[in-house]
Length: 305
Image 1 (cartoon, rainbow, N blue to C red):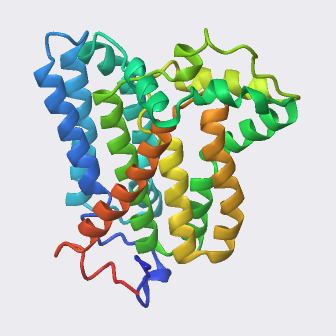
Image 2: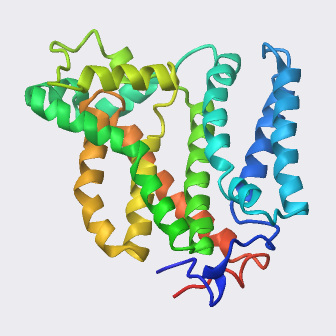
Image 3: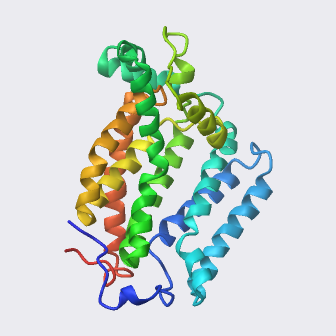
């Protein structure tokens, strides 16, 4: 089932005349959600007024773009890709919201779920597979998460398939937003912190492992972002979309996605239940995005082929 095929004539210019874009809806809903959280936990947050004003500015920016669609290529480009700036801001916000909402981590619960499901602690069990070259390869695979989604974005934009691009961006946005809500509800740091005392062998790579891990830690900060696994959800959505639109890229993504998903546990970033949560998240994002695209506001723009 394929969604978002462009209509005749769409490949000639940016959709500057279209006001409400598909990805605007989940974005505004998520901003409203964060504003509600800010109001409810006002007394616990360090600077609630600043958060509220900042969120209002982000929402107003989207509303202005909807009300006044940009016609010049530069602002039209910014309007198309404002999520690239919004997503890191939303992710960073979790670092400030989660400690205000929760007094404890939920890692012990996830650890119990993992053990009940498998009868072992997966990261400890996988120590028997530890090999510097395998660790190096899986760290590179894990890092592919930051590049693979962008490949389809670039291809769709270059080919001027703007409706397909909108649909793809919405898929990713919905998955990210739900994963952030998951972090707020079930904050967990991951096995590399909570099961470190059980690990008997350290992870060691060959060339880039330590450097990549350090850079990722610096970029992401220490986050309670274990459940659900966003890496799993997003890479599955890339595979799903590639299967429908770019079959050759789909075959390339199969080994990358399998390696990436395995790396999340092998490298001790996630519990197995996080990965299962990521799979469920990907399915939910597909269902919700399809439902949104079928709404009367968008039905004429996104056709099923």
